[in-house]
Length: 197
Image: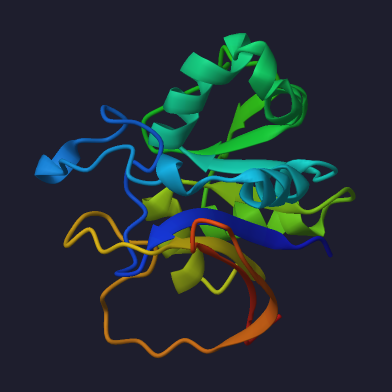
């Protein structure tokens, strides 16, 4: 069975909303879009690239899919290592509102029950599946205990509010540290396996 891996940029207070750009996701009055980019360095770039090269595909929520589909097909030359994987590998989109066919190549809307659809993807042949962004989807997948691993870049700042990677639901979840490194900017690159993995 292939693994389902969540890759997220996260603040110390667990926020993952709009890490890449000012206008990425201002919903809920979030005013700190683009907070993450100052923490990227060469080690972080390598870590991000390693997290997506050689995987079997991507599982995305609707909002992240739409942001990615608008950017990555025409990404600049310096982003092609990342863009090549995103553009050529299968992308499975969890959405209640999108219908197929989707314009971005190799993209498919998941049909039916989320748990059954994702379990079927995990049973299929091929490399591991990676979730990027897609915070509401990540929370749903965690509730369903379908996530095998979290790869988190935890930046040394507190955002004070915004969409979080983990639900604030009082539920205890245990993890096992698999690997960790610290960037030159003070961010922590941490890989955690879920207790079930």
